[in-house]
Length: 280
Image (cartoon, rainbow, N blue to C red; front, side, top):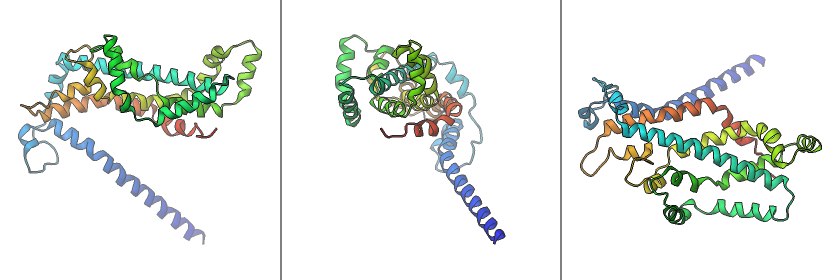
């Protein structure tokens, strides 16, 4: 009986690893196609004959891309927007979530209901009002026009609120006994213990900000002061030209920062989202 059980366990393990391997290959196929297209000559890109790897890889596209000041400016703007937007969004959401749970006020419950209502409203409905406000402030073509309208995230506020519902009060009460107020307790005691969970939301926020296209397309205007990577990528496809090789090379290089952030913080993703408990 023990041998049969061991065989069943081994078969199950092999099956799980087999399924995981197949899924890994499926998920890696788009990356392979992107890198292959980025290195393929134009005649191979447009050819109907399939080749596993380019016969003459176009490695010179990398230095040509990095020599373009527009691309470097776009990388810088995307980095600034992603870091500033994500960090401020996390901080605001953490403060709001903590206030909804810990600060005793009769408006706490209605404010939480309002957050839920905002969460249910499609984000596209606020596109035109946000654009009118940004235009009236003279922020068209500026980084603050890209960053400020998206600093409040009802989704993040909801998750932080759920996280703090389950946060042990004993730690905070010890700080209150020592004379600490809400802000000091939050920044000295509560928020440092939130960092693993906040890191999970940071990964999602960075990826979302880096890949944002529609809002930067409208706000950036014609100048380079607020051009992001996604807007730069769209310049490879015009009504007259289709530079697929340059487009895929720029997309491949632009993917490196996102992958670096993901691999550094990936262990916090599942654990961080699970830490909310989604109850309260």
